[in-house]
Length: 164
Image (cartoon, rainbow, N blue to C red; front, side, top):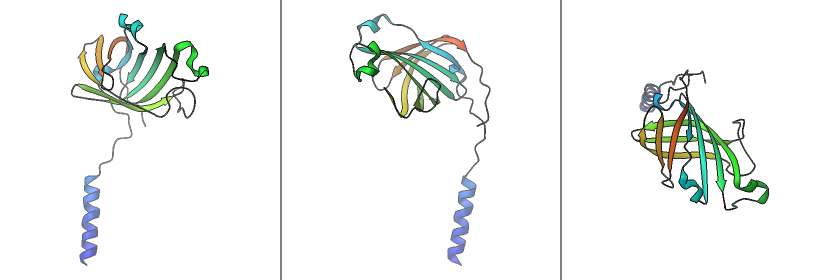
């Protein structure tokens, strides 16, 4: 009797604690909705390696195009491509206080999963501190290398949540 009562209580607690999430995409942060591209900085030519970022942020999702410029060959010659190459990622993001977090995967150019190939493979996990933001410009600082991204708004997007 005691075991069945305990089991019933456990099941009831679990059912009461669980809530079903809606089968629709989240709205994300309205401030970030749009296509944002890095402003070309004069100091980039002094760096050994730098990447130009273009984020497309719609609702709670992001799509990222990275163009990397490198004076050093970190890859096989067939991948180095004269020091300029493109990478892609997609996933979800979240804004918490003064930070933005991106969690996704590296993809092919069509944003389908990338399993093999040159450059990055696997998870794309990045966090940035939001140094400043306005309707036309966002300044982010990378938490892993303290480089600053000056993102300029190229196109505003209105979130229309899609079914999952």
